[in-house]
Length: 123
Image (cartoon, rainbow, N blue to C red):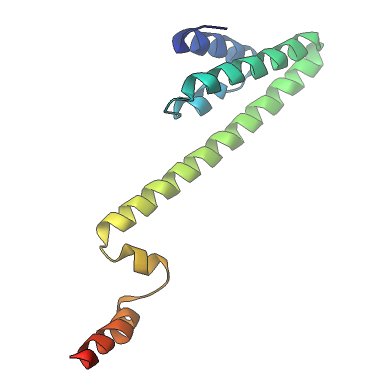
């Protein structure tokens, strides 16, 4: 299986359209060396789901389509929440030079009391 990422994306796009999923969108944020492997694994997984989907009758297909759509929405919301939390944490750390201390629960006052006094007593 020696397809390019573009060809794998096209294949996933067609399968997603048929099944009502968004596996391509979930993979879109991936970077790095394993990107192609992830796409290949996902294509194989989605092909299996596609074969199972083709076996079902119309009512079962509609139910499966709806289930896929709900699962897709849940996964998308979950991914967006994780990304938002990462952005918030990065912004917080950038804004405060003492972000690490505050993340550990040590406020500025406690830090001054604990470390500032010790420093002044040593002099």
